[in-house]
Image 1 (cartoon, helix red, strand yellow):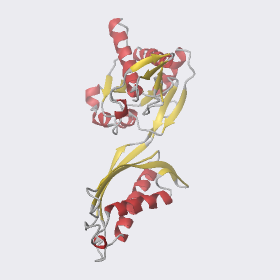
Image 2 (cartoon, helix red, strand yellow; image 1 turned 135 degrees about the vertical axis):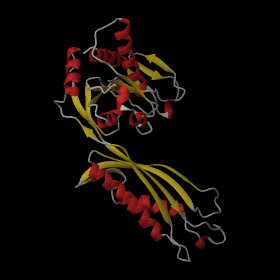
Image 3 (cartoon, helix red, strand yellow; image 1 turned 180 degrees about the vertical axis):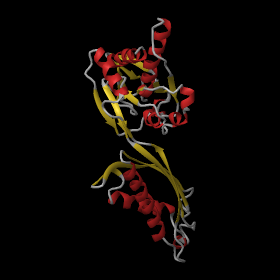
Image 4 (spheres, one colour; image 1 turned 120 degrees about the horizontal axis):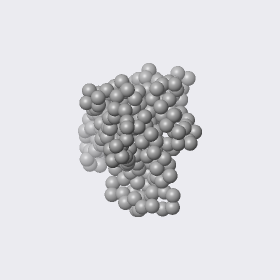
Length: 310
């Protein structure tokens, strides 16, 4: 199986790629979208070469997913029986083509609704319970406790982030509702659950402690789900060995790495397809400084063809 994801981050909307020396860069204040248009191009190159040149090849499946950037949702929806149950997977998404990603972190999504008590902010603010104050208190607790951002503790490591917040309609009303979304990541499934549990505990404690003059407290509604599972292939796994052999045949010196970001490979491995991820020349992704190294990208195209033809 050769795969790549078709979606890009919103910052790449309207991108106009131009060649500048040895790079492809965006013309204007956008990201390039090389993540993962370059991966799609590499896989398509292999497909076209095999078909147009009528090259011998093992049984092949080509998978182009959607919504990778919003939580690997396309790969999560892929049905193994429709993919003809391939034995090895090669996903193209990343930087240097000689980097063979053999593992990646797992992630949990968290959604919280904080319910306070509305009141006139100028006449009787003491009758209200501010959902914004509860939220701010909870995040401050997490930050002070080392559970927000980079998480390093004796029992494990990971990351977490509050990404979106929506609250309030007027400045003269004590805000009675706030909705926020957050995520946590870790290579250790048990520690990932610990981070999520700390988040929930912080919000629930903050809600209990914020009360109005009548003693009413805030309330928290909590929703949590596993976004994708961590995985780690053995260095001598068949997919890893095939990727190394293909890279070495092109004169590359391959090396393994483990990613702190999620990849379509997370779900493909979970579905029973041992999958490594190979770079295709991307740099500074998800920023307006994004660029693609042309020579590395062409190498990735050749690498995809080597893998497609066995």
